[in-house]
Image 1 (spheres, helix red, strand yellow):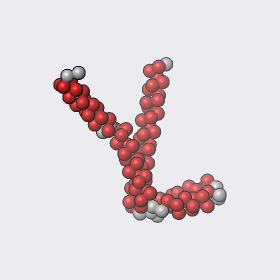
Image 2: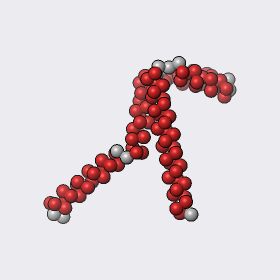
Image 3: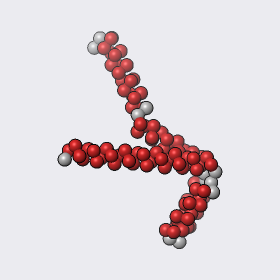
Image 4: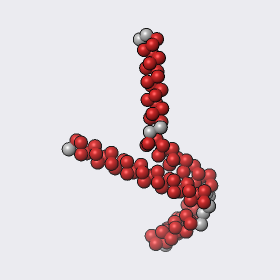
Length: 108
């Protein structure tokens, strides 16, 4: 390969990597990771987990009430992180199901 070909291929590689890192799926994953980090940083996850498992013995209704109360009684930052994480997770799930179904439709 000549020097020009090497430079062109390097440029193509950089552009491809940049496009992959800025794709919709990548941004959704970044949001999910940032949400998880925010929840871990701003909430006492061990205490929430311990309380959750103590409530879980009382049945599904108690778990639902616990989750609703925990979300409503936490700080706005944690609520925002939960909302962003939930939106990113749902969006990734829907995209995955759509890709799976469209892949099935193409091969069938």
